[in-house]
Length: 189
Length: 189
DNA sequence: TATCTCATGTAAGTGGTTACATGATTGC
DNA sequence: GCAATCATGTAACCACTTACATGAGATA
Image: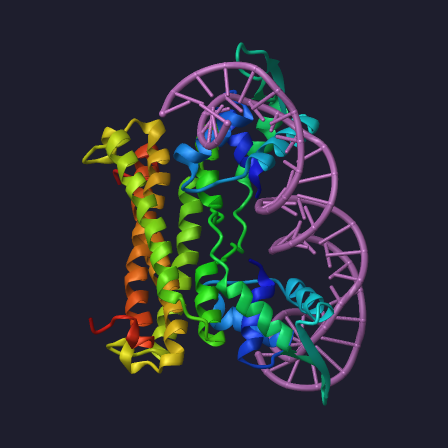
């Protein structure tokens, strides 16, 4: 599993430039994937070398040239083959906040509450933008009202929403625990 | 952020072998970190080279020799320094299931329900073992009953539980959506 | 007889990040 | 004048995986 498969998936739906795809990551794919521009451009170059995509350079006025990529037949084959493979068993779990909290506890450096607040603000902001997208694009009472082709896209958004809600619930529990560890931080007033 | 910091965190709490640490990943650290044995052994070697840890070889009867690692003073310094650094903004989001569902939809290969069921079974099994750990080690009505040093460890478990519960809730929504896309799969009977 | 546990490693490769670089156009 | 948008890249590095390797002792 890698970015290359995601790029093939996007290009299967239609031609796009690297820049387009990066915008998509920001706009409505960020719930399940993200990548830096360097990686996107490099992987597109590598897919081209492997013959899975091709591009046509397009000159523009008042803007730099761009490369519009299209998926090739062998690109489609590779994508289909990958889709039919089973999922990888081991999924990476890497939670930096948890490690730093534990490490902070053992080393004694404890700006834990401050760190939690920062993270919480970030997650709340994310959730807010997800709610907005939901309202703007999927303001319905049943999934039947959403066009079939968009239903899975909607579910990627739901994943983001449920994940953030769950995180924030956990953060509330964590706050109580941190207060219980450092009563001076404000547990009683 | 890398495994090295996690290793330093563990060794800060006491000496351990690479094998010990791997067991811990399996037993009660898997909620927020995991790693292959190759990576653990190699990173321990690199930490040794950097002077952040040292080891003593210990011969055993009827068992292979082992290397018991301890953190050094500069290891503790490095850990403290890292803990006080702010968290990385960009956290990786990589959901293979979602990409394959979307890609399967566009390429037309759709064993989606089967795939969902497999994943669901896996997540349910995980959640079950988490519940068991909770019952065995933290069967309390308030966190105050848990010794202070174990409270953050408990919160790592809670993270795992809430995360899996949230995933399973999403899976239920997803099942309805997949049924709505392929009515023959059994939506009506 | 086969598999699991204990305990460690090397070699080669993939996937991803960080730092550095260019350059016109548009808006405050 | 300063920052942002559009649009692309190179080079060096870090983090992690996969495949291969060893070998005794315990358990089924």
